[in-house]
Image 1 (cartoon, rainbow, N blue to C red):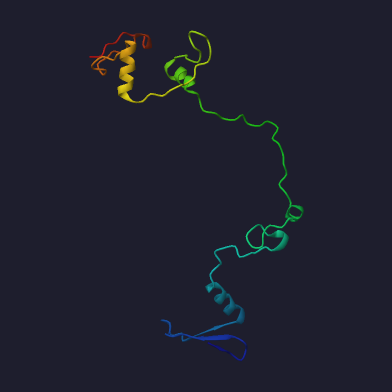
Image 2 (tube, rainbow, N blue to C red):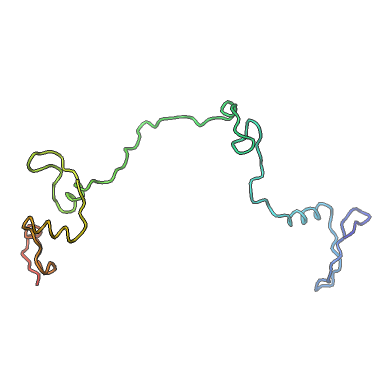
Length: 155
């Protein structure tokens, strides 16, 4: 690489191009443009803030930051959206099976879950004690009569 008398940059090539070119002549601005194109962009934000504008780390937050940096306006929405909630187990049973068990049949008070029994042996003992045992082959049953308007029987 050398500088010509007129200020242009002359670059000698290691191997000539196919058309026989051995040197490339560029103006100083063209040379700087090609050189700048080879410099990679920084991957991180290299702007550093100190003093009042620092947000943390070293140096620590300034006590005057809240006075200098504009704060977000606090606006309450006119019609806040109602908080979404999931359905209770009683609402799900009523929706899926048309079973309304939100109130106690005896006292009329609200029904609450007091236990969740998942062990099959314990469930069998409770059903046997209450006289509600399942038949030997639970898969060979007809659907409940009140669910359909047509009488069906499964074999």
